[in-house]
Image (cartoon, rainbow, N blue to C red):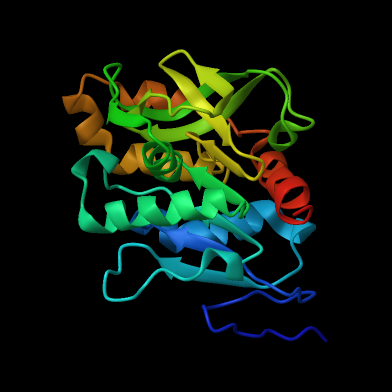
Length: 256
């Protein structure tokens, strides 16, 4: 019978224990309907990664300024979540997180930034996050890969992904490698150094999660000139989200 243990950093899942846990670093939480039906961001990442990671899991909240951020080197890898916050706010917790991310990249800690996590990593490394002039993106879109990278192993050159964002990386950081682009967003995924990766899309979002987001923001979308019914009709199940998450674990975390 498998046992469930708890590390000093937070909750873990059952399974084979490894020396260091995989950390989900929260920068926000999902909306209430999604949390009830599918769990918070960490639950969704665990579901997507599945048995590719058999070690322990940990969680911390980057927004809690009363608690210091944990030592990045204490973890096998770190996933930085999405958020309703904007990197452009330049809040103290965001500035603190950026300094932490710069250190983690320099120390070659395996990192995966998702949505806000993608943006804050780019800003930390010298890029600029801005409100996207193309407006909000919510639903399913197509992105195109640029070059090859272990994160996208087994993934076609064009693929459907789930998105929910208003900001984007308007100016790319120096010394990063572009991995994917979208029609409204040139730097939709990038690599920084040997172990850090970032994606603007949500590889953890299933189609029903996106549908909940659209339904919950129906009036906001209408106010912005978007058609929520058309967005709902265009939602597709993202076929490679779990593949990308598992690639992060197999090729960047376990290979470290």
